[in-house]
Amino acid sequence: MNKEIENMLYREDISLAPIKKRLMAFFIDEMLLSLLLIVALWDSFRVAITVQDMIILTNTFVLEYMVMKIMYQTFFTMKYGASIGKLTMKIRVIEIKTLSYPSVVSSLNRAIIRVVSEMIFYLGFLWGMMDPARQSWHDKTAKTLVVNV
Image 1 (spheres, one colour):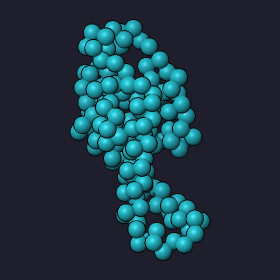
Image 2 (cartoon, rainbow, N blue to C red; image 1 turned 180 degrees about the vertical axis):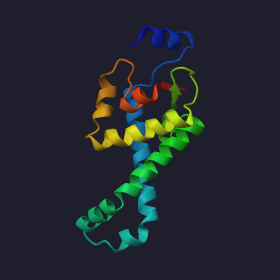
Image 3 (spheres, one colour; image 1 turned 30 degrees about the vertical axis):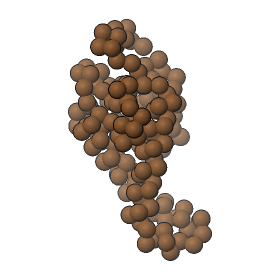
Image 4 (cartoon, rainbow, N blue to C red; image 1 turned 90 degrees about the vertical axis):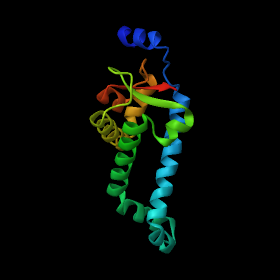
């Protein structure tokens, strides 16, 4: 990790969020968003009889689902510094420069790159597990860190 960032975190008594907490937050958010998609498309899902019908239905709305994920991540990160999953796990996102909630631009950048990372076999998330500052691709591009509350 960059010594300057490390010193700043130490000086402010801030610690990086562990990977386990980030994974649990991710899982919570994915379950909430999936449930929201099912509720929104309930009439269509109710008619789908086979698993293949459900997969086809889900694939039909993949673009809308990605937009929903971007809006969700952007709004909650900008407004609260954390998604519902992160709030539950008592972790939050901060901008490195200000050590406060990310701006609208940083939040939007982070949300878009997060979805891109998911589309590329979650490689950005894997990167974050090996990075000393635990920064995934979306954290790197938005210049953010995920820390304990």
